[in-house]
Image (cartoon, rainbow, N blue to C red):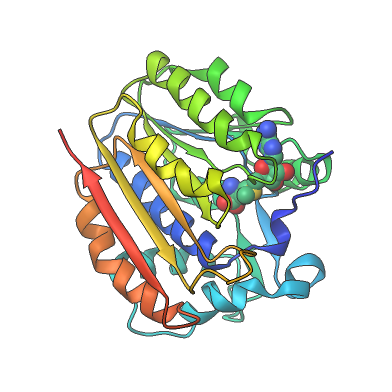
Length: 281
Ligand SMILES: C[S@@+](CC[C@H](N)C(=O)[O-])C[C@H]1O[C@@H](n2cnc3c(N)ncnc32)[C@H](O)[C@@H]1O
């Protein structure tokens, strides 16, 4: 039984970090003519109404995309991402938010392909509806994204960005991320893999970045953004991170220009800040 619904969290600070980095990863692969795939193992519904239902209830987007919406001084990669969000909001009022599948789709070219996995029955229905006119370049699977990834690797063009973005409500997700990557790296060592994780006080979340660094890869980048101090009772997500395996060489500098701005703009208390580190062979 899946209880997580991304609609509660759409457009929050964690989506801002994840989606900004995703767009940059895809833009980088798009610099060469050769086709590539984007594989999103945990795709969600694809798009969310911010002024209705789940999203309105928690209004987490107000502390994320909402704080960027009216700003005229956005660093270039942040502006690039916010401009994509504007596509769903042509009248200028922030009412809808695109998930990773739509952001990826808008960033792909004619020769590229999108593969999406989503296990939740209602979300996969919405996802299919959001891509009903997209044609054969997009394939939506209503099945387990960890297993699905295994079956797709290596992708035919031998170039791909893989986003791994589980809900982590079940602690098995932490272990499955590690095991899935170990397997994926044997099948397709040259892929770009972006793993999102929540910053929580629970042990598995705190250990995940260190476990990712111990994977057999030479090049990685780790970017994290925390918007507040961890709560004293240990509850709640205070930030999130992305661990990118085989990142573009330009990504570190791109994020060095964006993360200080995001930490300042999305901060909720004096404990806000960011991490940006990399290992390059
Ligand atoms: C954090 S949300 C995804 C958000 C989306 N990637 C985005 O950025 O817009 C995680 C999604 O994974 C789905 N899910 C949970 N377990 C899954 C699994 N094993 N395989 C595929 N999807 C799963 C959940 O239903 C949820 O919609």
